Length: 173
Image (cartoon, rainbow, N blue to C red; front, side, top):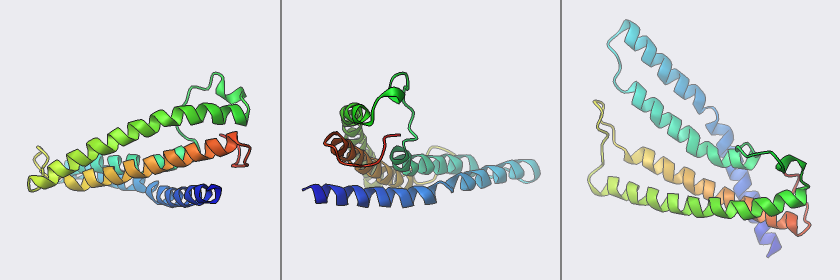
């Protein structure tokens, strides 16, 4: 059972690491879209798609980069006491709190699935903007990101349980 858990951790961590390293360059995509928006508003007829496309790029950047952020310990936490605790104590507290994250992500995934199916079932839900893009592609990206975040949260839970049991999983950040 221990080897199965360690293989799960290695697989999920490796996958989310690689995805996160690619997705982090999405900031340049957003910058290019917003630069084009500024140029087109100044010199040409304004492009109607730029602001909404930048929002879609930001959503993809955020939800696909979330698992990488969790894995790297880049998430925000109150560090009044946490920084002084031992790795064992950090693992105990994190194992308890990550359960709340997992429950939240399950509900978020469920709601995202319902929203995605609504978009698909009505011939493709469209935005109310002038550009009127289909919304199902960004909803699909959100589902993938939330699912990857759920897998990463489960991986973090397993790592914390292994730390509590005395296995070397690296220091808590």
